[in-house]
Structures are given as C-alpha cells and as structure tokens.
Image (cartoon, rainbow, N blue to C red; front, side, top):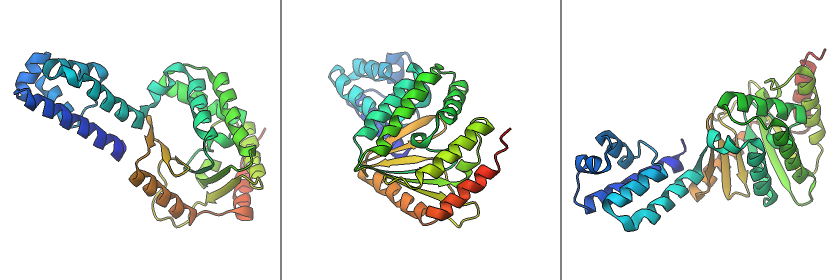
Length: 279
C-alpha cells in the first residue's frame, strides 16, 4: 500500500479512538456497544484494517452522531487514494478507460514508466485485448473486452494533439513479455517503432544489463507533476501530496539516466521484434 494510504488510514483510526475516549469508553466497552469483536476495534483504531462506510456510521451512532459526516468524508478521502482493481472494474473495463481519458485530456505533460508492459496509451487493439482479457480472468470482473479496447484506443487521440507531451520510459522486459499472440506482439512492436519519431512522444528503453539506481518495480504515471497514478497487483494508487509527487518525479529522472533513446531505443525494439516467431 502507499504511504499516503497508510497514513490516511492511521489518521482515521486516531480520530475514531479520540471519539471513543471522549465518550468515556474503553476498547472492550466500545466493542460491546457495537457488538463487534474487541480485535476489530483495535485494528481500526491502529490503522491495521480499512473501515467501511457501515463501520464509521456505526461508530458515530455509538459515540458521536454529529461526527458521522466528518468520518464519511475522511473515508472518502482515503478511498480516492487506494482504488482496488476489483472495485474499479465492477462496472467493466470501459468505465475505467473512460476515466483515464478524462484525466489525460486535462494534462499537458505526462511522464510515465512501465517495467514489463507496453503503456496503455501506446497499445494496439490486439495487445490491449490480451491485456484486458487477462485482467478480467484474474479478477473475475465483467468481460466487456471490446468496449474496453475501443475506450483504450480513444485515449490515443491525445498523442496527436499539439501542445501535448508524453515522456515514456519502459524497461526492455516490456518488449518481450507476451500479452497476446505472436502476430499481435509483432504488430505492437512495429507500433512502438512508429512512435519514436512522433513530436509529442519521447520513448526511452532501459536495456537488460543496464546499471540502474534501483530495481524496476511498479509502473506509474506522473500527470503534470500534480498527480501520480501508480499500479500495484490489486490496486491503483492516486497520489497527489507534494511529497509523493516530488518523490516520483525524482524516480523518473533517475530511470531516465539509464534509458536509451532514438536509434539506440529503435535497435532494442527491432531486436525484440526479430525474436517474435510469427507463423
């Protein structure tokens, strides 16, 4: 989980504890009043468990009815930072992709990094179809694959709009991890070659064996240096504190120092393309 998310969860827990203490109750008494296990009261207050809206409303009713709105607001703020993929995809891929279209349409400059996948905004339909299908199968979410693919392709309109800038870095693994069949992978790599000369796109590749200041981990998008969207296995983190944004800005610059551009990046993509066994 992100530092922002954990800190927000702990802050919410501290506020719950404060309200309980103000009501003159100890933890066991609070648990009895709520008909909960004492361990749940402890986990919530210590930031070890994420409260639900039902939890905070019950807590407010038990000790401070007037604080219900405040607690719901704190919970909403916490949830906007940590967005589980299962929850986001409950309505299907199209809704998620359209949310990204809206976010990206407002941006002028995006710095992004992916360690083992071609960035969504650069994906071909066949590659995107493979990715979205894998996600639905893994999470058991709605399989509106074709709607999701169309929405993802719409995101790419931003690549051709004057005044936009996409500074992308991928680790070389992204060129080799197969997310669709051989013909689709070949077309995807051809697509990346075609992006190298695009005025709005700067594409760097960190080659295998390059000395890097840290090991590549999760992908992230830094949008206008005001919002970072980072992916984990089960969630998407939206980080907008100045400290987090500055940290990811520094990370991107460090990664840039290990990346190859222009004809050197082109050579790495072509080499990966040559290894794809197209029937």
